[in-house]
Image (cartoon, rainbow, N blue to C red; front, side):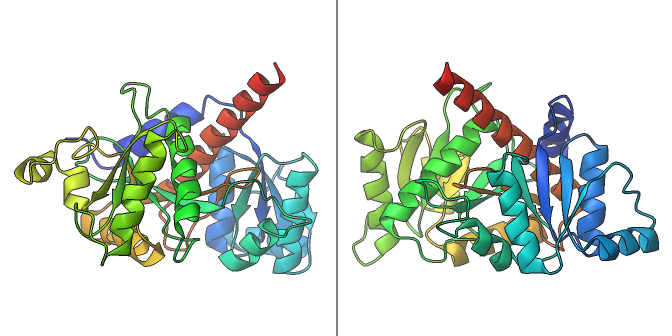
Length: 317
């Protein structure tokens, strides 16, 4: 059994040895968000560019004894302007990651998805939680629990591909070759009355046809069958994913949000959050996040940025 926080501590320790990506931080205008950014910079995880009202940020730092020495500040008068400027820094090539400060998520994501000035790619933008669950041998990626409310089948395909990319960036396959994706529903059988079971089956067929690559998919699977080998064996589910899933694709945002928060508040799990599908990784943190969760979110972004640099280098080569 793994100790509490052990997986996050290993992740952070590994990322300390990597170059910290320049990270545009939109509106770090409360104590928690500003302290989290400074802590991540001191840990060598990110090289932040603070985007917001200079006087307010400096006054906040002075009030709470937060040392901003060496951290650049891009002046922006209000939260929407800060989101727009943070996105612009990415477009200018000055930042390799984006981070949410104390502004509302919708304000930041609104700037990200603007057609002319945002950070869109061919993929749908989606959110992943990387959960450190006590007693569970490896991290669990849960998607999408924060961005896509009721995704269509086509959107679930992108959500799944984003999660697979993240799993590879996190070196899930270093000790175990396969990324194993469970497409969750309330049952492990296809039932036309439960649309998520039909979509789960369709996603698995897409994987068989090569439309989704880089992982082994199975679904529909109920949560117990996805993560408990004993439950899968009792129900006679013969699958390389059942009981061994490291990616959980949920039916909709409500299911994902409740699953992630249940693990956090009932099982003592920590949740690092990242948004994928844009030009750069986007670090989303919550006011309720622990310091360790904030640092782990930054570490996840470090690995995603590293994977993208390496992919771009191979494409050029």
